[in-house]
Amino acid sequence: MSRMLFVILLVVIIQDVSGQKKVKVTAKGSYVSLDLAPDQIKEKALAEAKRDALMKAGVAESIAVSDFLYTFEDNEKFQEIFQAFTSTETGGEVIVDKFTENRSVNEFNALVITVEIEATVFVHDEKEDPTLNIKIEGIEDNYKNGEYLKFTVTAGTDGYLKIFNVTEDYNSLLYPYLDEKVVSYSDDPKFMLKALQKTTFPVNKYFPDGYTLEITKPEKNKEFNLLIFVFTRENIAFLEDGSDVKKIMEWIYSIPMDKRKVVQVGFVISR
Image (cartoon, rainbow, N blue to C red; front, side, top):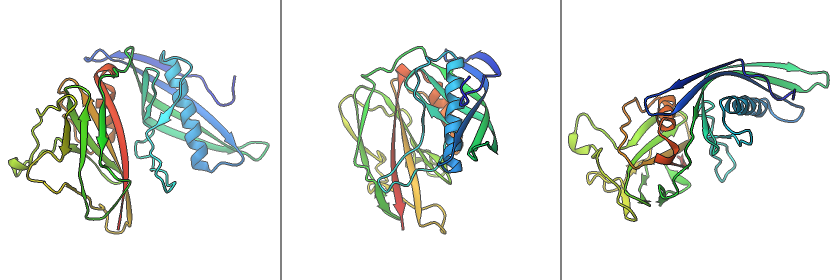
């Protein structure tokens, strides 16, 4: 047995109402290094646990695990705000429900980190639909605090869009926006993007300058933002609290791969 991988302890299969197969697993992964920083070793151990979880859930063995992390041009890595959420192009996606780790030093004075996860694996039999695509233009890498954000989205086919904004400190459903106090400020949740037509966001006429970009906490000089665009053929409502990242990812993963296109765009706000 490879020292990097451990055996899955538990597998439970659940079929949800959308037809997606969800597999509950308990898995372990380990990584050893003399050179890497502890956080880097932990990430690699976690990747091994996810890889084994995907394989035991019936996803093909030749899988490439890719965390929802964003690397900016200044080489500062977007913090692991997704709490170990993982995406793979081979038919499976993982959400880590619980996470524990153990650290030790081996006989070569190398740091050994072992992680144990309880996770939900979404298993997809279908493949991505290449016609279900969007092109996003106009988002810069860097903005000053107080600037406005405007961008365009061109859809390859008719469909509906949800946009989530995720930072280290807060998460929200950016579009369609709902204002419970001023109804006219709310976006139309039934608005459809037309095939090959460029749509400018914000679409609401009451925000002609764009979305206001502000650093959430006054003590911070820089904030990392990640926009998650979810484009679907059908108007699938997101009914959960937009501040819960886990709920966001569960909603995305519950949509079959051939019925959604997910695009991520990151940027930095600085004072």
